[in-house]
Amino acid sequence: MYSEGRTSAEVSDAVRAELLRRYGGTYIDLDAITLQPLPNTTNWLGRIDSKLVTAAVSRFDPGNPLLQSVADNIPSSFNPQGCCSIGPNLFTHILHQSCPKNVTTPSSADPDQAEHCNGVTIFPRSYFYPIHYGYEEDQLQSIFREGEGLGRAFLSNTHAFSLHLFHSLSHQGRVSPAGDSVLSEVAQRNCPSVFQIVKSKDLWL
Image 1 (cartoon, helix red, strand yellow):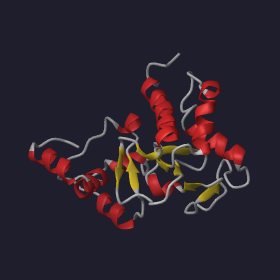
Image 2 (cartoon, one colour):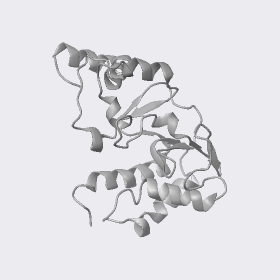
Image 3 (tube, rainbow, N blue to C red):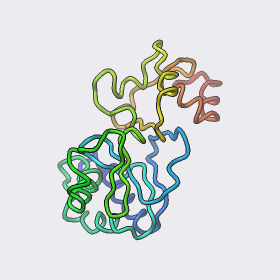
Image 4 (cartoon, helix red, strand yellow):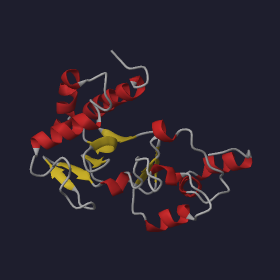
């Protein structure tokens, strides 16, 4: 049933929804680096772009109706030929169907404005995905660029709660811990123990 290259992502999407539905709590993808304490409310997730909402960084009370709807719809929504059918696509579809005036696709909200649907807050992209996953030079690849002071500039200008590395797209990128890239600066400030180990062993991030 699974595409070999997508199996881990599809299983992760399904398990994430079920764990949050059953137990509640905070979920953060392993390729996300937190930049400051997450919002202290519950029942929220975020936009990954103007068209999609994702639970890759999220917090819910157990038994939340949105998570129940997602879990109920996984069997009929799963598409093994495409990306994200039971992840962002399903969350976005259910939220849009439930609140078509509040959660539009694409979003009609201000880029820095949260949306609300049946007690669930959808935070804007800038909260958790301040650097987009697109392929333009000023998007995802800017995480790795060095010699331009981008790391310090990013940290001094962002109000984001996390930075997503989109591992499936960026896993071949690497930077020196001695550099000034976004990844190096973020890791040094927010993952100091790991950063010092990497630096002391003369490894790459």
